[in-house]
Image 1 (cartoon, one colour):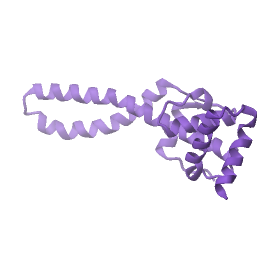
Image 2 (image 1 turned 45 degrees about the horizontal axis):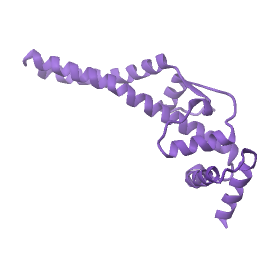
Image 3 (image 1 turned 180 degrees about the vertical axis):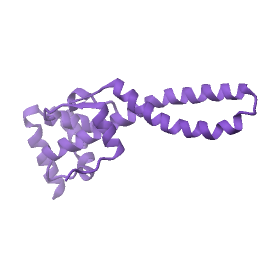
Image 4 (image 1 turned 90 degrees about the horizontal axis):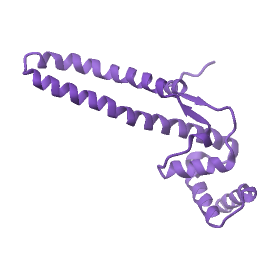
Length: 167
């Protein structure tokens, strides 16, 4: 039975191309750390790419659904007023729509980043819930960078530290 998708999931599936390649352990740790710090996460590490044309189509569809009712409501009041007010209003609405795309693309990008981090988390940390352990893992990862733990020893180091925390 197919699970019903939310609007956000449908937009993600429409706008983004997702790689079938698994996410490397170190890339997951780096992406988790950057995401928790509200920093830019490299899409290459998580294996996704935004199709900008599809992003514009999705955004303009949502913006149209929001703007058309507003135009319908305000038209009644503005039709008898000075047309200069309508012009200023049109300029404001247009600027809000175009500025809104930046917010939309950042929001949808963060959503796909979190989705992919959680998906990779289940592979690399199946016994540690993401919501409970992501900050702890980030802290241990940052310590490992300071201590210059080698790449080949990183997973063992991290698992040892996590098990020590559980005791």
